[in-house]
Length: 360
Image (cartoon, rainbow, N blue to C red):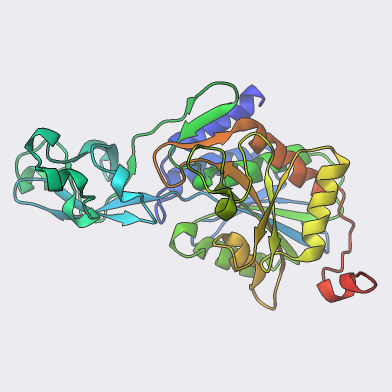
């Protein structure tokens, strides 16, 4: 990965974006897209939309959600401890003893998720996974009055898990689900900038996906695309206790994953595969027999229907503070999408029934 793109990824990963509070990360995306898009727009939900060749008749939407899972302050005890709820699907068993940052009106505030020391637990306690309402955050104060000077009910939090590099091209961070989608959407714009396109490209960094695909719903309605490609993460199955019969045979470093199934328009899906093959870009396949839990679901059923597709980045340890991805997969995903859009003609009939005629 080129140094400038790596710096963009690092800056994006270090900018907090719990669902509903995505502004710091969206500012990073907005500034990046401005360098390559004809224009960049935002909307009332906070989606950021980079646009190329807007005058073309065929509009193609790219959507990667920028929001990440997080926590929110729910209650402050008289001793100054914070009880909290999860924003999105936090993996609660890994939460105790994690460091957190509380994003307050006064700026970031450090805290830790406390738990009883193992020395003080009986045998039964050591086996239990505490529910989230039994966990608390220690910010170092000794009273509710002190705490209320620093935090407020409803303040969001994220885990302290800055991006680090492992061996080779593997990187680790909280929030790769799905800031890498926003990263790939912006990188696709970079690869397309200055190129001759026959279609209009709307690259959207969407919000609130973890709470119900909300940003994709509103942005797809506003853009009214004929085709839309969601960029998300998917479960890698290349670690010791992964079950490939469930997750599929997906590995880091072997390319982005192209989905097939009910959520995927056959014509658009085949165009992505053909573009990858023609450019010799490695990819993997995933069978998704139902509606996916991604922005592709919301895009497909927008208005009277949109030709939808889904490409995903293999990700180990999803929804933990140590999500793990390959930089090469990110690069190849952007290259694959750029190739798809550069090869797309000005008019495409995405109706699957017509495409199926004459086939076995």
